[in-house]
Length: 164
Image 1 (cartoon, rainbow, N blue to C red):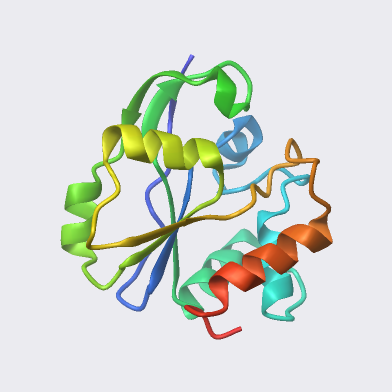
Image 2: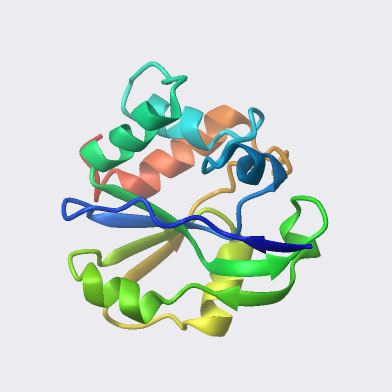
């Protein structure tokens, strides 16, 4: 089954870009980034800012933009059974050249998984105009790290670029 990603969440105040690979089944069903209740993405970000986790998706999106965070996925579309990145095939990347031209203020890119970085490196390539880092995956499949460890690592990586 061919899956198509969402448009980016971004505005003129975005300072950094968080990049996932491709929305999972539940995210696609709900039409929300990181829509699976077991995914720790939103919990990590809200905890970093010492804010209670918003239940409403529109509030979550507003929270990102208020804090200078853009969100997108490396892939525009792919074939994938289930939600595991390892099942992705026949992938097509998003148009990052167009994105960066439209959003030149974004210079720091943070991948939310190693697989996102691999696909980005394959189709877009790391460049000298941006800085790149990989965050621990917020996916429940990344069970080798506890939530508290993920939060601490995200904080260490992001605190120099965000007002935490």
